[in-house]
Length: 525
Image 1 (cartoon, one colour):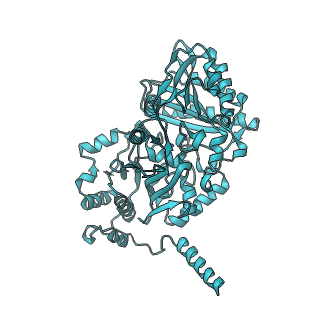
Image 2 (cartoon, helix red, strand yellow):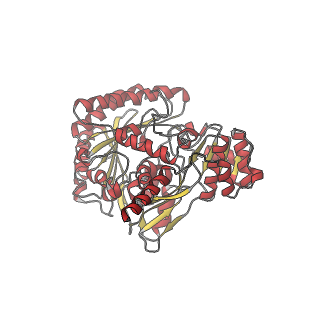
Image 3 (tube, rainbow, N blue to C red):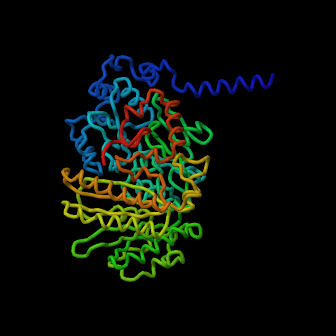
């Protein structure tokens, strides 16, 4: 009899999860349940004009900006990349709480109006956080950061940048695992993985999330954790915007007393071979001392030729940690901005770039960490680089980082994330091409350049048996299929979970921007 009761209980639980959203779901009933008056709900008219007017009737003019208003123009101009600045949503909605977000999703669903969501707006992917003729949901008014009483966790809302969160926490001598560039939004980076100065110590940002407050396609607001919706919890850790809108992250708090050491150094081409050796050796040393962090970038300057920029950091306020000795022994830095500094100041410095255009491009790939492989990637890039250097206002760079053994090992924490990284295949070279320029007429040339470098580098890696399919979402091009790089089993799992919690495909169809489950955002380069 006890077994019968247990079977019945399990059956009910499976059934309730399988029917997370009932087949007869009614958006009107859900809006009424959210407290929306029946007289405000539109008739069966499917248009974004109706959606925006409905939002304005529900929330008032203060929370909805339309195209004729100065605040609308200021908002659109705030995006990092020109590709997103040139998009004109039908309206901008500024929720103040998760219930507002729920209502906005239901209105969008009822009117079949497409939407996007903006945390910091620091995406190079057109449509990543803005949308043409739809609703752009801006989280700017949802900007709380709260440290728990025991200082073991931090809850933060998505309408903030990393420097804002770090500054709020510094007075309590804690931080969290997050971005390294001041004006990057907290939401997108965390949802795509999130590399930190301290990731070799504590893992990626997504691996430090304890729980997500998630607004689902049916407007339900749920708390997702290891013990509550565990399948969804795993998929949210690196799964991007495929399952809902996160309105609060609760993450592990990291004790952080005082400053750290770090900054950048500029070298001419003669020092590149020594820098490459130091890059490889430091990447292989993370298990011995995980406090170090590095980014080694390459470009070219007029009348100088190839140059390298080293971003070198250490979690403690010391410049002479033994693990840094090889880099520190390389003489001849043209500029040296390293020193003891705060976390916030280092993120500001890393986000400060020379004058360039505001059109932006990213493209990324990975390979097994190997000195010859890293050198080959650098050589291919520098061989191809002259073909684009005459582009107006161009600022190109190839950045080499390392997904260290400790970082990859920590992707297995709390049941593992969805990225598909396997500790036995690490450490990995993480290569990023980033380009800024000004003229839209140069778009195709520059995308073709980055695709050509990647294609050659991937072919070389495959020939050496060093290729890895993983693509870091936060660095990917709109022409790359990020989810496929997580592996076929993980992709199938992600699709199944999407069907379970979003059977109508709201976050695949009505929120079409960024990296979805079935292919790259755009076809092309």
